[in-house]
Length: 405
Image (cartoon, rainbow, N blue to C red; front, top):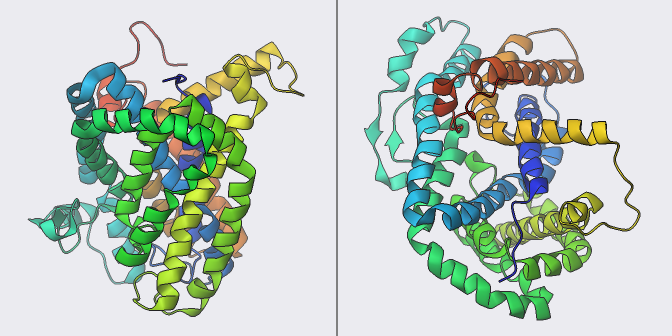
């Protein structure tokens, strides 16, 4: 099976999504339709509309890229080694962040909602961690009055999906190899994955706590990434379909607007209108992800990295190219720590800013810029420079003798 190596443009896209979550969660402070931890007194409906353009593709893309990475990891380590590596790289930061970072947004929520609430963080911390086993919400098996996984739901799901994948990786890879020639002859077959995604969101319902998608739809994106995105024949078909599938995705997404705007509970209501709305959303999500993959693969820089210079591409100045690659490499390995850090920082900034007598745009700009600055400083000086903190945030040990730059 003809395959390529690791796709650097997808690492960059993953980092872009993670950084974009700072903008997204800061916007929820001003959304009238979301129960975010800290809310501004003034809100705007524009946030709801703009957020929809992100949720339809961003988190699905993270899971698909993770599935592609799983394909490479299993090829190098085998199924058992892959499972052990993911338990360390995802399980350790999940436990650490649940204990050290996750209680902060909940505590700030209580303080923001009730001006008379004066309990110290250290008194709240053990109450947050008072939990019991609850298998009814698998894979979120811990529950408590104040406990939540918060933004770590992504890590919980990703770790679960990796462990589910490990014993099935070989037959899935074999099936992918058999599908490659067929897809090369009939690229429209790449639209078929939209059907189960539409069915899951429609019949099982969408979950607001998981960025609008049903949790098991993310499993399909993860498996699609593992099975399909590593075959050069399928990549060629994806490039051919990128533009028409992108247009189809826009039309499907536009078709969801009446349902989301007019229905009281479009996420879970069991009516023909809401069922169709959710199905259109699921199909649109796959079209958007497929189109983005194809368009990225069409880019001259992507072709140049694989030794296939594109028309109209121009040589990049050497210093600029080196600087860009350094930034890309720096942020690529930072994706998980930045994700783990971002929400507590955003909520803390929002808590301090919403009381200001300033316009929404000013408050939003302060929350975003301040959060990004603090997150990057925390990562550089609090995470990446020591072996222990790298381990706690799921990073590999730095190469021996390499000083932080």
